Image (cartoon, rainbow, N blue to C red):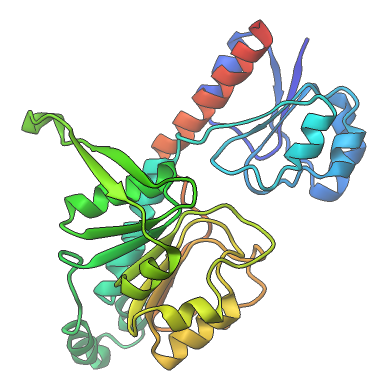
Length: 319
């Protein structure tokens, strides 16, 4: 019987599909430092973002036939090495796109309307802080008519663009893999309107940074930060930044300086260079909203991820 280790868990709908198909699924979490010594017991390894699948673990996985990542990126898996050993690596790139895109706008609205500041300060001194917070919030701004810069125009970037267009924003996008991209903007079925196809031309990274009122990142992680001190200098003074992509794609030290000196009006951060976050100088600043790496953590996304990864596994072994 084929044995699966879902080390970072799996939604019950996906679990049921796998069990109905005859797979044995173990959802017991094995700590990173113990995984290499125990992985040989399993035929399939499923992870999310928490577990790192290194060369050492792949070498120890003598029975491994497939590695699955529930989510978009596979940068926590040494996929090149796995494939060199004949082990396919699969993921679910589309399942969480809407959830991540909506979190981007949660951070944008929080920054534009001072929600983080109000939620932080009002409970401490309700009567004393109320007038001050009301005065601060009177400087809030609307998203409508503003320019949203999107760095990385894959599935999530495209979902962000759809919400932005629906909110009356203008979109500037950069992605080295596209010259332009058609996106289909749909409406609630109750409106009985056909989807609209909109062409989004790609701009240079420099153009996006220099002209955007807000910037959101949707790029894979890598050894170098995509946004550092040089990029912050290119941005408009008073721009907003949201990172719901990968920890490390924004230089956290440079971002902290930009937040403190007024170059950035606010930042929304869902992912951190090290998790739990070790560098915390920006956490708690009045112009920062944070979330605990929850971009894909909605009920709907988790169900889609579970079902999609289960279906991929079932079809792989059928074929």
